[in-house]
Length: 141
Image (cartoon, rainbow, N blue to C red; front, side, top):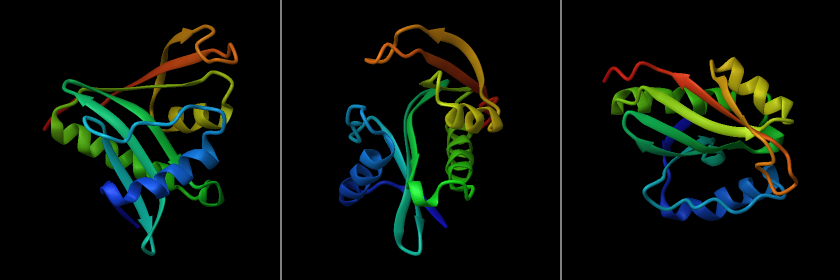
């Protein structure tokens, strides 16, 4: 497994992963100032995380792993790398939002130490609620 910064030629593969995992949602902008990291296995991209860093905070915009590779700890590998990167940059808190009804995502984020800080009612187009979550990482460079 290798985690690295995204290259411009990675975008088509990221779009494939995004479309297969995030059905019914808009396309993510992978261009700067977003920072995107990819996870490779045997030379193939199997996941990515996109974020925006605004020290002392960072926001995870998306984390996705190919469906057929989910459940093998790859998301945790990506998230651990993101936390290390953020700490190195001096980030103190990482934020994200996820659908309130997405039990799989909620369990994952809670297992990584995120806690819910507020509920946004009717946030999604289908009137579904979103949960804003945060993780305090201390931000010691």
